Amino acid sequence: MAKDLFSQQAASYAGFRPGYPASLIEHILHFTTGRSNAWDCATGNGQAATLLAPYFNNVYATDISEKQLANALPAPNIHYSIGSAENSGLPADSIDLVTVAQAYHWFDFDLFEQEVRRVLKPQGKIAIWGYGLFYTNNDRFNQAVLEFYSNVLGKYWDPERLWVDKHYATVPFPFDPLPGFETTMKYSWDRAKLQGFLDSWSAVQHYKKEHSNDPVASWIESVADLLEQPLEVFFPVFLKMGQIRANG
Image (cartoon, rainbow, N blue to C red; front, side, top):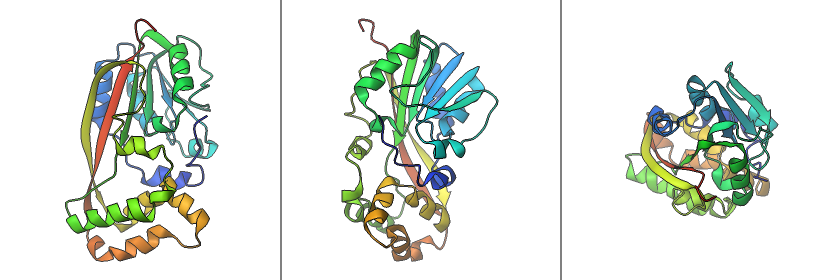
């Protein structure tokens, strides 16, 4: 079963994690023929499910974290429930599109593949995506981010984080590939937004369990002079998309 690394900071995750661009959803929908049912697996607070809702009759949004679902964004056709990547509870051959946003790297790939094969309709599609480490136009700030990410928090990242660092280039994906997609999300963040986002990192929570101090607060102070005005922050976005193999 996928790890639950975000229940503890569910409120921070809901309040400070970036959303996803409309161009990403448009690319996915271009290859998705059915519009009846979508399954957003590991939905978290429903960011992806909310973007899918206007295009499908029903969006079934599952997560293993009850606290994450408690912060989910409501919509009449989004059906939130406790469920894992390996055991969704959904009927067989019922889903037109499976989506996984910033969570695929936590899954048991083999068991998830079995569940996807079970729930997808014959022409159904699967789309997994994520975003990498953010950066700005300020070189000094970027170096400080890398120092914090790699050296301060380095040993506190779970090994699965490496899949994200490589933009899913090497992640197991046993489906017939469809065209991928890359783009960049851009935000204007003040100090509070940046600090809230960093506090949602799983590695930060691991660090806090071992130490008595908050690594984010001290790091923010080290770059405080660069945060007197909002910063333009960029996130690289990457997508893999596929369908069930014809011989599978």
